[in-house]
Length: 583
Image 1 (tube, rainbow, N blue to C red):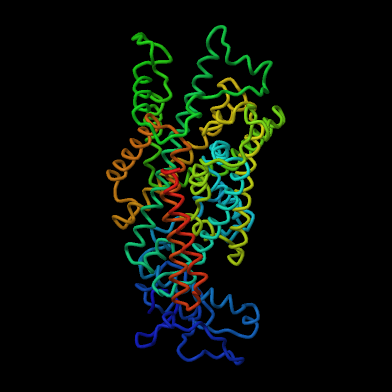
Image 2 (image 1 turned 180 degrees about the vertical axis):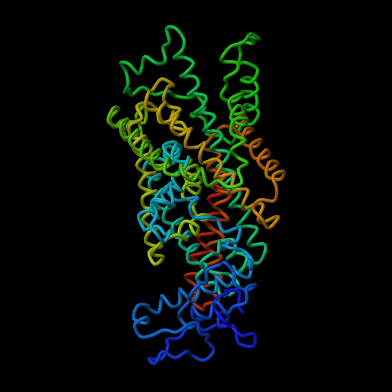
């Protein structure tokens, strides 16, 4: 008796599910082909020994395992038969992994697709649990549209208007192509031990390059996620600080912060932070001095209690966040927080409307002819690596794209949906970057790497954006921590939850790193471009190109032109990384 519990296979027979050839059509008479077994009837089920009658329901694969007549054959295409055959193979695999279980369990490293879905509740999906192209496209869009959106006007200013837009579109095309290689790579595997429908990109790299390939994929995927945690912590500290400052000032007599809401709701006034005028390699000594100065209560040296002493952007607020959010990091399952994925879509829509409203208020302030004008616009700038490094992380979805597309109702549309998702992301980046850049009313060197910092605490729209984004990031941060934990622990211990103690230790270390950056180096733009250029070199440029070359070579379809073109992609990644520290 096989582990199906309802499909009879004699001990001396060849296991039909281990045949290499796909299922064959039955003859018109309805007979059973040689080497295939007949599905038992309902009357036979009662004769099965009790110890073998599992509570698990059988996977009834009628193509080659049971009787079929012409009417049934007319309802199934050849593609359906192949799909059922593959499903039966996977069912047998999971039965053997968990012979006594009552439900199937996918491998631990296969992430659940609902982590990235924009549908907050399972009830909104169809009866099959699959999602259509619209949901898939917006899940791709929602996953990529992250914190780098706030840095896009700054990154565009670093590159110049025309060169910046060209780089935005070019990087979108390159990243889309390498992501397409990622989603196609499991299908081209010749390793029969890897299920292409459940394989992650790290499995592909392991199959082609061994353990080194797998570890490279996992390590740099985790680096991207840790970079996301750091950026989130910096921004959450920023948003919480300004939100708290607004609340405190509004409670004071003769407050000058809140009246802007009464008679000056819409304003073109902007704030020019001093640090945005500098474009240098991180000056750690100055950053350390400023942070310590804030923690000591600023330049006043007053030991008495004051709000400014206990509410500092680079001193106390990041630590307050650590104590408040640490319990949320230790949940074994992040399912609850996936209910808030739709907030990402809402926050992006709000930011799009926010920058468009500023364009209507301020108008277009660009001068292409007079270099001395405060509205002068550079068409190109030698600091363009800041943009290319940021975009590498902005367009990064390579470690999640297979998970998102695993729930696709029509997998034949994967390439189309992925391309539409990238087009939407590129449009949003260009729209926000150009709109804010064009409307900025003073010197563009004042544009901050978090453009909300260009508005005072009393600006209604920016204050609303900070409060909304703060809540949205609080719900996303546990998901990021879960992804870091899952990938790291599975690579080391072979399981995603190796015990509460290890999870707590990892979370303490990650939060300590994030608090350190928020305190001593809270420069969002620089963090984005360094993390993007380093991790992107491996995961966006090198690994997909090497996988394509390896698979094409094995299939005999690799031409010199294809080979050199994909080596060129790797060269672009190397040049992007070097340029961050040279130019």
